[in-house]
Length: 253
Image (tube, rainbow, N blue to C red; front, side):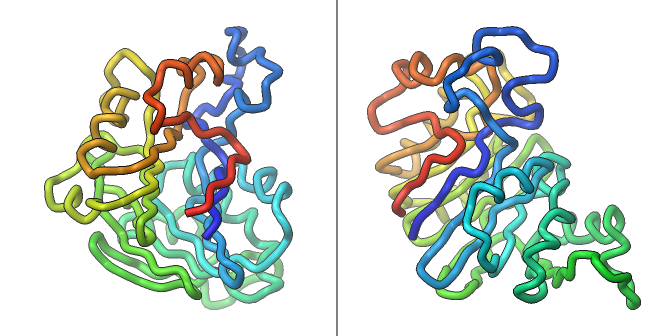
């Protein structure tokens, strides 16, 4: 399978609107970060993870082919605000959206025009599939398992695909969920910044400690703020098996 980081930024993205720090003024494309999202692909299947407000521009960089499923992590704006922009992919058929009950219920409220009996022409055609933590499923030839993590007090979903796992917006995790991630070889996990505790996100040291706890062989950090620093400088502060991801980075998993 191939995984592409469509976006690696936190809710404000990088550059941050109005900021003049060296990261936000950087001309290195690795310091430009759309809101977090990812694309997992095999020869026959494409699965999108999250669809935030930048998704139109993120997917413009990719071949225009069918999206077989969309796995949502949670309802926050920076992870779901671009679902309407997926309407173009409905030329291939209805879009299958997988989300926990809280997210699914909220989407019916925030996007009511997509879930009425009489849809007007042009709206995205969405099949909404409520899922729950621990559940396993298959989209095409991609098998997934939903894993609950905590975003402060909000339970959200991470996803495991064989020996690859994608986690965003995690602050804490239960022992039961941690067990479901044991043996992951390639881990993508959020790490907001190096310092200054945050109520709902892990910092870089937290993410590294978590990666060690599940035995990950290689770890890529995402959902990053401009406080991470310039890409090369920031990477030099990490262990060899841990790297900062950047928009457009592709992994074989």
